[in-house]
Amino acid sequence: MATSLRVVLVTAPRGRRTEALARGIIETGLAACVNILPGVVSHYLWKGKPCRDSECILIIKTRASKLKALERWIVSRHPYALPEVIALPVVAGSKNYLAWLRESVR
Image (cartoon, rainbow, N blue to C red; front, side, top):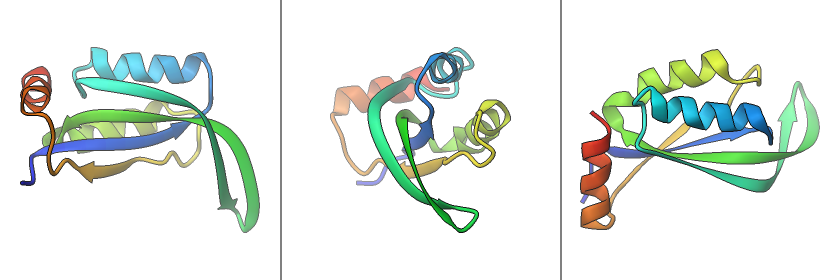
């Protein structure tokens, strides 16, 4: 059962800037919840060279209708030149939690 809800993943550096991103996303009504998962090690190619960084992942719960605004908001405030913003569909979940999520994001 697909829903109109999305989980958005965003990598970010550890620290106050990431806390401010999470808080701002909630305060602007772009999402109902943001989890900050610390201790992530990312390996990636940047400008043709392998890189490794310690990061956090923001796990953002929102509506599909908020994705474009959320992406614009993140990109305009994120410290990375090319922030990761990936949305995944919510296909199922706790009925009460999904109802709260829908109610929290208008």
